Length: 325
Image (cartoon, rainbow, N blue to C red; front, top):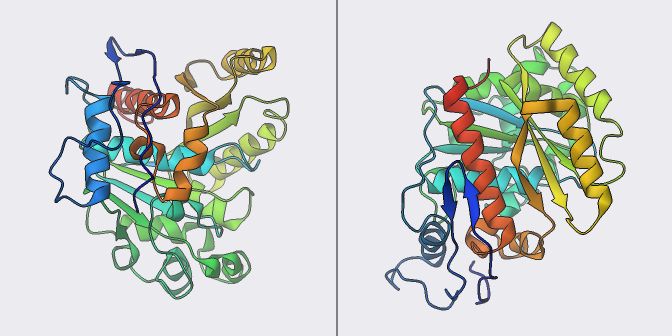
């Protein structure tokens, strides 16, 4: 499903690791510069790359081993799903093989990637409860060849209760990912806004945790509880787990509060905080209603260029540090 034609919003040059991304503010969504016979989403994807990386000089290096990243924060509405979807699309558009595991019963990541997730569709619930191989459940994302999604249906809502009596309940997702015959460069796990068994499964399966933090007053409330839970999982279930990345979202440069929250987070987490900051942007909110990420919906928007910058930073950091330490 393609969006209604909208001209790309003008965006300033975005410096990225010594390079600059200069979206073409005169490119219209009505004039994709690709073969008109291509599927609409494939045209959108190619157009996104042409706008975000017009010279082709910016490369998102592939890691030397798969990076499994859990996107977690028990506070709702901080941008977990939006971050998961847009980082995954940005990395896939630049040559990385990416798998998104939708572990939220609401299925918003599946919606954002336009992957069917109505009742009866094989989903992550089947992998967790019935040991169905992940490869039989994963679906290719239309228009983006390197991107796959394991959807979540409403069945997942009962998984928290059903997992209680299952053997090795905390490591079900880890075993499913490890058993996948194809190796991905990135596996992003979109967690529900809670600290239940689904989130514990994600933390056990991951090597890294990415925490989106909203630039609002309540942003840091409850964060200590999340960090404590991550430490407990590290001590008892997954000793290699690391909080590798903090991403500031919904930043409103007009307010002093956003600056204050940013400084607090940077002072507390230091180098773990990405330089890229995701602004409040209407295009980011609109994109899921068209079954797209903002990367393909409006690649000239500030939201798209910011997520592109964040994805590049994550890719470069992973290569420079060998993933997680």
